[in-house]
Amino acid sequence: MIRLVIVDDHPVVRDGLRGMLSAAPDFEVVGEAASGDEAVAVVTAMSPDVVLMDLRMPGSDGLSAIERLRTHPCRVLVLTTYDTDRDVLPAIKAGATGYLLKDTPRDELQRAIRAAHAGEAVLSPAVATRLLGQVREPALEPLSTRELDVLALVAKGSTNRAVAAALFISEATVKTHLLHVYAKLGVSDRAAAVAVAYERGLLKGSGR
Image (tube, rainbow, N blue to C red; front, side, top):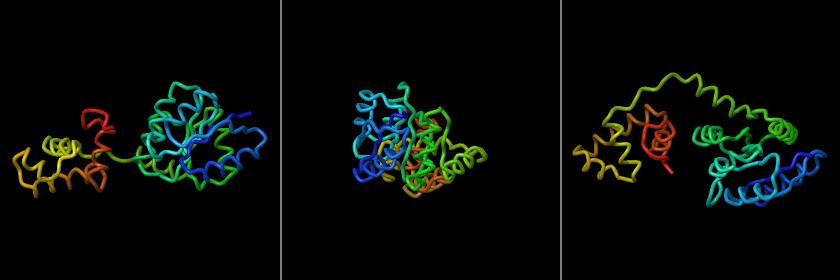
């Protein structure tokens, strides 16, 4: 039997997954959780083989739970509706064995759970394509010293006006620097720029 824990903040989703998976003769759902903290507690108590982990949940999220479960012998299979870079890459780096989307058909989900249990990497086609694109993506142009200065202040929550005052430049210049940052990092807003910068080690600290 493959012992499973389902982690999702929506009770309807958990009920649906439990019903779907309990019908398989080799699956046993031994626990459920609605947050990252609950997931860690349930996994510690129940010692499952595979954890189906949603990512975005109120309070402690799935990513933090994956990181905390890295030393646990279970396999973590992400099951979420999001396939953006800000979700996929951190989850894989944190230690997830696989990454599936919630529109995955039942038979494919069951095969993925068995594969994850066997230690195989499991990725939905959309996620695999996105990761392949990241690998093939040419090296991006590095940020200039001034662009890094601007981004560091933005990461601390500074407004454009505050950044301009701190660096003795105009707000228009700040906006121009930010546009250059967005283009170089392949993002479209301040939050994404900060997240990617931390992920790539361009800013000091964890970004959390």
